[in-house]
Length: 581
Ligand code: ATP
Ligand code: MG
Image (cartoon, rainbow, N blue to C red):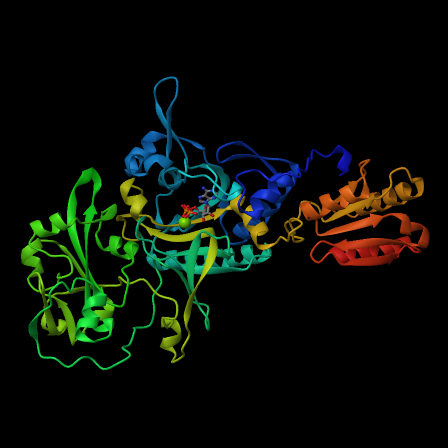
């Protein structure tokens, strides 16, 4: 491709709202152009990168046995009404009517469409498993579209859906997809981690997110410093936390604790580590239609409640909100003095949960459900039917559960990541809702067991740059670069330079090498600045040194220059090919 014929317009100025380098460079480099909030045009350079990424994804998905389809972007609302998501999905779902007043949505994801498609074609377990995927547009009316391609409203996703007759087979496909995604992200040259994620909200069990490590990432992930364990905060687990000191010795008794309303005051009052206190967190769970229910979560005083884990305990609840002092007092409860004794009678709540690390906990101090009183010497073993769940938020420095299993001492720490992909064992949520069944070996109708697997394809364009850039611009790897080499003629008016460069250009093209020939009538400095901004992996400069018998190969990565001898043309071409391979 000749630069002079290529639709490319680089800019000096960064967009005003650009806080990420990927956003700035992709706009300045002429890869993308915004046409509305969260909506972008892909210009030729951007389109070429997008196609490279799509091809890597497609090749790997095809190799894993998945079938590519292309599903309608405009989706009849009835499909979404049948699954119940038309109401539930919220404002991210763009709804509209056609001229006949029929309701439609722009697909933000395609579980409904794919389930209907498979339902109409697959009748028997013998036709399973099947995995269908597409690389297509999605629309989510994000409340705050930002960071360029990172969080758009219209964006490109690879979404795949698999259908199985057994949980084991779903698990097999899930593992295959984990491997496939790892191959894809490795081919894209990304440093990533597959992290355990929360799957509560969408239902199903077992979900992993592919997080690309980058300081600009919006997600905090918890990783082990010794093993490959990685998880989102909502899913992170730790090895059971052990006390620093012996349990305080006290027989069960009620103690007057005037105005001791916080864990800090309580541990000070009794001169004990907050590990031995029982923290009660009372919340109001809110359900569809505004119905509410009080929920209580008990954790050690030294711990913090993770709200997503807590919400997942209250099946069907959409949100947990704080309770006012008055609301608590109307139940006969007092902030700072809530405890498990008699709580069921007072509140009538079906949602009373204890953190699983509190199983068999003894020597605790907890609220007495009476103002200014606490109990000491509490043994949770004396209660019957307590429900234990994982409730706590892991802290940096906690010990890794995986390492602990093999007697090692890995420590957990936090790092930032960008969610580039998500794989999910969905189960029967959509097949049940949409009545999608197959006949099993006994001829009985069973709902399909499903998995779904997404990759943010357009987000990846930005993600790659977040990991690979410097202060001058982008740095593409050979697998994702829009062109492999930028052939720069430093002086167009010099006939020898132009002739030699054209000869190289034609030769490289004939060898199938993606070469862009900067034949613009521009200063050498401007051409180099564009090379650095756009980030082609290499530039070959045909300039003054041609008279001295060499051309210069510049690697974008470190801007190192190498002189290449031109005395033998074939050798020169071979050297160029070897370097850029
Ligand atoms: P996020 O938590 O970032 O909002 P999500 O969990 O809602 O993402 P999924 O439904 O899992 O997203 O979609 C699959 C993939 O699509 C994500 O892993 C992400 O890479 C990409 N993606 C999601 N929302 C956007 C968006 N608004 N713009 C660009 N890519 C997106
Ligand atoms: Mg996700």
